Length: 334
Image (cartoon, rainbow, N blue to C red; front, side, top):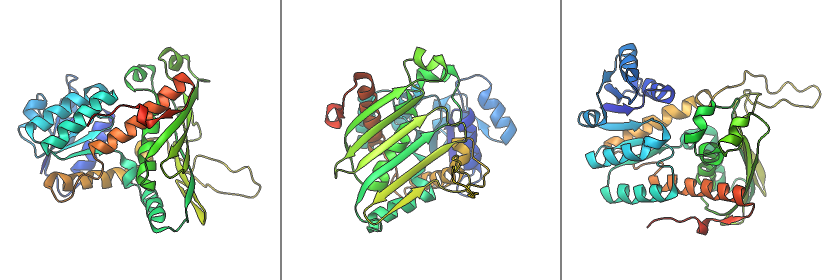
């Protein structure tokens, strides 16, 4: 099949390289709003360049959106209008209201849309999901989940990032729903800045935490930071009445032991989300190719993306207002 990709920056080039290695993909067609970016990538990798998204959509079997966040909604609307199966990196849009509108649009259209929450394809998280579903851990009472970036992004990234809860913790919110099969009913979020001043200037925080209450009274503690200097640190602990299972505890763990005579983890650490989740990205895009051909339904739907976004929205409101927030307070279109 011919896969079109909008956005030839870092993540776009990464996804294009992954897709090019898949047996189901015959050709990659790329476009980018930044002059020369798509042309350079196409020339370097042997892809085809399209002048714009309309030209691209007219010649492909499936579409991948890896552009800046503020363009996702417009491109998704174009893809749905063209009837092209689409993979869209999170978020679908910058507000709950527009995300809800897109959910209605996509579901009414029947166009297959797969949203990019790659942790659903990570072997560790899938093992945790299976353990919860089988009852191996007994009843689950507590979850700890963290997304700790090794180093902060450039200041210019923050105005379009949506903030730490929407940009980083949203992955934890999605994977908590995926692993437990439960919904979040209330949150309490907080945040602080101890690093660069540009976080405060952007109205954001460099470190955040939230306590989520799920609909079966499971408690989840979620933390995020832009200053996890020991390495890119993404983990989950699922604690049950019969045992605890941890995700992310291999030799790349970005935590050192304070105990004597312990040589774990041996390293080396991972330094970016692309390195940490490279196998998951391959599995995710392999699944998207199956979605595009109609072989399987979307494994992460627009409604899943809306659910995670609503949790992030609730956490940020809680942080700003200093109070617990019920998910019922966060509007959603029908």
